[in-house]
Image (cartoon, rainbow, N blue to C red; front, side):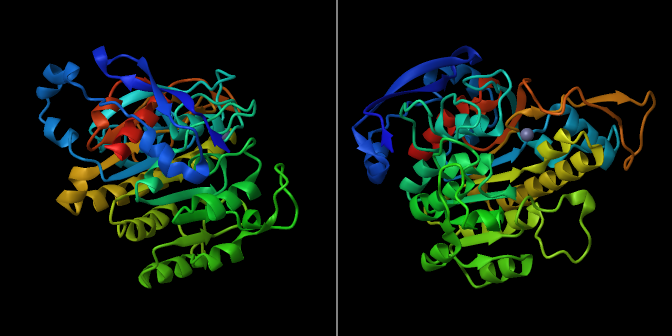
Length: 422
Ligand SMILES: [Zn+2]
């Protein structure tokens, strides 16, 4: 896997608050095997710049927004549009009730979502835009099928800077959205190969989700990969757990690495969960992942995905959708409680909540009267697939001011890369 000797990446410029891209050269002939050298050669420009001094000095959060960033927590409610937020909030708190937790974040902006080859992105291309900083074709996982070089991912940059790293999802942990941060493959369906790269190449410290079969398959995937990556993970020092109790006990034992695989395919949706299930919920995985990663001396990067908001919208199913949105929001509460428990964390943690795309063209069509909490809006969808609308970005913490405006999804890479390299 070669990284280019002369690679252009785009960063958002904050000048005049619009989307202005600036080409920056990455210098150095190298491969992922000498990733550290590549990273040392990356020149990341100051994104705040004195250009915005007047505007920002008016903000009471100016100081807070310019602290050094130690931790990045990147949270993805896959396929969630703004109407999903409204529907979940009405169901939880009523039309005039309290906001959802992620709605309380300081900065709100929105991002374009188109991919390199379509107005309608998939999760692979959308995630790759964040993770690797440029547009990719649908289906590509931070990898150009035409052979062009690509950037190391944000997670790889964090790892090279000595940070701990984590991926949490309610889909297979080898699904497209987590995969873009920890692997480079031509096709999102190469889930065995993605599992192999997590364990053999990237060495992600904490992986919690589902997908036992992807880590232990005798049948080659689309990339021709099969193998027992569970025993390989164990040899590399990962406790491998299959239940919530196993996860909690590994954390209690002080592990600094963890592979949790709680189902073969996607994890059980919230709205059909029964008491006594052995699968952890997203907020529980979030809690335990933070307990492990916070031990990282130089901070951490974690991506946490509520994977099934997307699946609920593909199914045009409102109960499913609201259940997943609310569970995702509970995970945001876990994160906010963790941040607020310590002023150091608050000063040095960048939190970003952003859906990769909207799914279903979900709309609220009624009723023509007010509802109470625990009541459902009249739902309508225009599609069984993804749509091409922009999606909201909620963010807080140092550097987040750059996201309180209209940006492109590739611009999030520049914001996070700067945070890691500062
Ligand atoms: Zn989808």
